[in-house]
Length: 322
Image 1 (cartoon, rainbow, N blue to C red):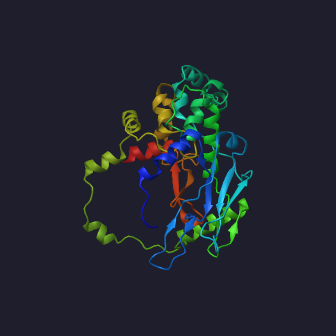
Image 2: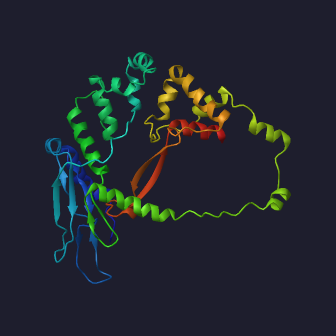
Image 3: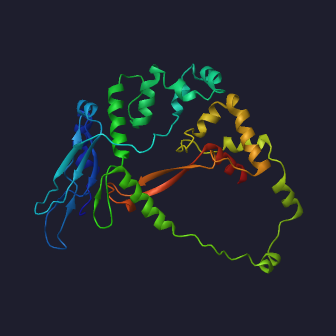
């Protein structure tokens, strides 16, 4: 807090970081690392202390975090660097990366393995697409593929995994939780409390109000119950937004549009089956919850925003309905 820092003031420093390939470590704790300790009205807070790591160091210690502690009597926050291995309670979900489809042999391999549903195991054996996969995972999009940057992408990927991992949270009474199970229970407890409790007695609709309201015409009623055609489904898929986070199935919409000649049969069958029976399979009606930080250095559960990522089949059905 105080006067904002302009890009021109840090241009030289940022250039030095880019030249040395230094990257800020994932931070928890205090966001502002310095305070002038003046009285109210003249007090200034700033983030001027950074924990950085270079390529070789991050290759060896990829799971690193910087804990910015309470400054106490000092005007700077102490930084505690921790190198650790994160314990995972659940298996990492599958994610399909669209740039794999750029490989010339992808279509033929997909066609061979589609019936056996072994796409993931087959694709991950391709050593020659390692750099492109890592490039997308690391989000280091400012470097073009084709250069020998595998080590750099590995380091960036490790940094991103470290930044995405939630290794500690503080409760409302400022108790620090580091045990993975305790962290999970804290998130579930807080978000469950926000949802509230269910009401066993729900009021019925007022039939008189419904009767006097605007009703659908006979033609509109027929349009709502008519059979969903393949053309409608295809048109819905074509107009769906790209580059969106996949759901529990791990497949983005680009996978279906890019390989429609191979997967169209099963996709059309799944969507049409829903409109015929009205039943939605559990594998489709499943969401993956992603926690998005609302602040630069999240420390409590309230600092995260939960986002529900639906499966591609669910998105296609919803698009057809709308």
